[in-house]
Image (cartoon, rainbow, N blue to C red; front, side):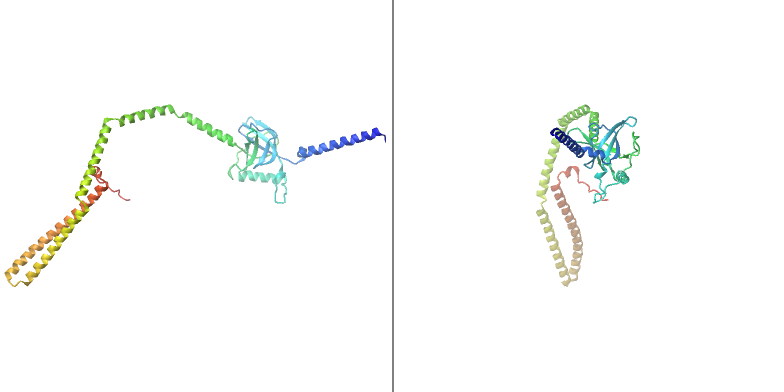
Length: 329
């Protein structure tokens, strides 16, 4: 074999080797997806899908499981239809990493959607403005499913209901709040507040209010002076002294009665005895009257003491009177 044929052979081997290496690289980088088994899923959104395009990621609770393959506009339904390819290889049945057959995969998703609240929602991809579709349990378990729209394309595709995004909810809430604020008549409220403040200022500066306040101050001072005078005159020590004096007088009267009775019993003259007995009877009646008078005096002193204590704690009651206690139910 001459030298030129040997060079041509080496060149051919090099080219074939390069093509094979390129094919292997492309297969590893992405062409393998062309041969992977995919399941078509479908959803619909009633909001803007700006930032979502073919090839956008589809995630299940943050794990990418597929991509968007088609976006269509359903004019009659006013809904954006989104078709997706999902790789079931991401879902392991058990710890042995066994995969779902297609029929069991459909049954799994239908159960999650119907009984556990699995839904599709648009999410922002960072601050780039791009969006992706996230599968998560956004609805309450057992929530009734909405009727699926009349989608285009092949039938029998696994359908997952879509829910509004957080951004739309926030925008709707802000729009509603701004609308309600715009309905408030701030100018009228300001005018009414200014009128009320002006009237309040005139009322407080009126001569009648000032005179009333001055009279109230004078009355309070008089009440305080009266309370002090009553407290100084009817002090507890003086009241106690009067009570003690009355008790001593009553004791002396009791002793006098006992002495008179003893004398009358020892007397030998009938006339003297009769006179003394008559005196004792009269004195007994007088003593009863004195006892009644002393009891009334004690009650009077107790009332005066209670009045003094009450006026010391609440002098203003002389004007408004004693407050009645509420009747307990």
